[in-house]
Length: 534
Image (cartoon, rainbow, N blue to C red; front, side, top):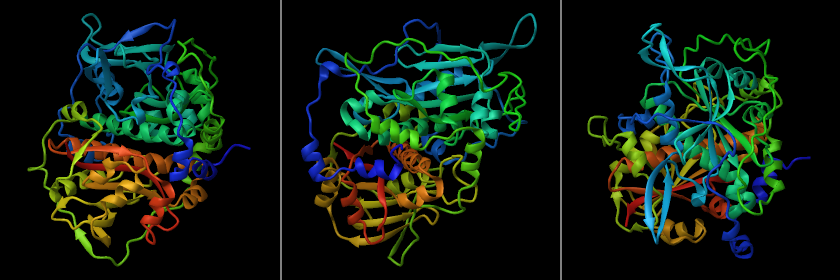
């Protein structure tokens, strides 16, 4: 029987003892390559013109997804696909160091090992310019299934033809059926497990979440409807992409745009006018070896398998059958309240989204200088407004599955201490007063970076409650809601020129004890730190 989510989580917790005893040297001669390289597939170059999303980053992360009104819908084209892929997973920064060129990508990834890949499944995508002879829109990207290669800013052609119906059948999600294109995020386990071992299943959702935070922000900045679909039949999607889930598995689907008039999908029949059915010919394209000796980690695959769904009907039932209301969070208490003081739209940072993504990094050193309470308030206010996910109901609060807890050690106008953040109320509830820098460092694997940070934000959940309500797949949802929100915190942070941030790892049970009794029964999903970069 596959390892369930709670068992997996317990077995991969960090403690001072496990970190001390589990330390092992890394074999750099066996380090996996950072890119997926197909050996014999044709490639289609993406547009030589990247369309920079000009909307301010703070607005892009805060505004709800466009409503998809067909009267307003504009169809994506090759430039759209280029911008989406580049600002979510492209190489945005190059640094020459000691005779080597280091290439950094758009989204934060544990260990800079870049195990998350993006695939595009689309119909014919055309531009606005009409063909000289027919007057019809030019088809700039033909219908197909593609893999995004960030090395070359190109698309590897996996399949030709319109296969959107496979995703629609696997998800039974109206947004997927209605979208001109969908992006599928995957994780190649070994690329991360080389360093982090069995914890890679956690990191799959940490890192896909930061990628998708960028992707959603770019889509919204370009005025396309977009949301994250977590409920789908896993194996049909893996088969569509030619994946072996023991090595690489699909994690999320993101439908982008609306008004797909080419596809009349009948969920009951399970077929589509363009793709016929979910029964497709298998593909197994050859790729370059990741490393000389690729290892397998059965626990990762077991944890993934435990949460899989068999078909689109099961996905629809899983999605619609969850109990109403937030799950795994905690109700406010009677502690002292501090209202956030976010700045208004008129005076907020206007740094464009594309500049913010290019500027974003993972801060490696903080100065112990306080940051502004208004800037912290603005980042929290804009980033923690709820993510468009299929597992959330329309009337859910901003966070449905995780609760944010703060350790504050350096904010002008906010007393040091620990707080429970209530996004719907725009309030911090004080749990404990007093500076606790040494404790902050200890919680985060005894890393000085957390001790020096102005604020540490932990996203906590009651995992038992989440799994009871959503099954083992709920583990993915809780991890993802935390990481998507953290990805937005990254963007909100780097929209300000004097702030920096990074995610860190932690001692799970010690964090739970630290925030008790409010967080009793909860476990941390993600840690994000913010401060003044040195």
